Length: 150
Image (tube, rainbow, N blue to C red; front, side, top):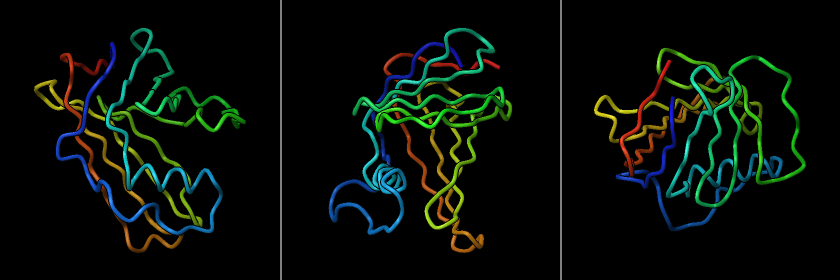
C-alpha cells in the first residue's frame, strides 16, 4: 500500500436515521458499532514506505487507527481518537482480527479495486458463538489513483 487514500463513499452503507445501536459494552465497543452504522465519509490510508509495518488510517472525524503488521505488543490508548490494531497482509489485502461486543469477533479487510479507483472495506462481525454473522462492505472513491504494494 503506498501513498494516501482520500475518498468518499459510493453506495457505502447504512447511513442516517435511528442513531446508534443499543449496547451494554464498553465505550470503545459503542464507538465501533456507531462507526458501522454511520461510517466516515473519507478515509486516508498511508504507509511511509514499502513494507513498513505500520499503516495509518485517518478519517474525516480525525480518528486515527494504526494497523501494525509485525506482531508487536500494542499499546492501549487513553486518547479516544487513537487506536492501535493488529493486522496482517493477505496478498494485497490488509486484514484485521478484532474483538467485538459480547465476546464476538470482527474482521476488516481493506483492498484497492483492480482499477485503482476505489477502496473496499469489508467488515465481518460474529457473536461469541459464531452465530448470526454480519458482513458490511463500504466503497470509497479515490481522489487520486491509489495502489496497494506488497
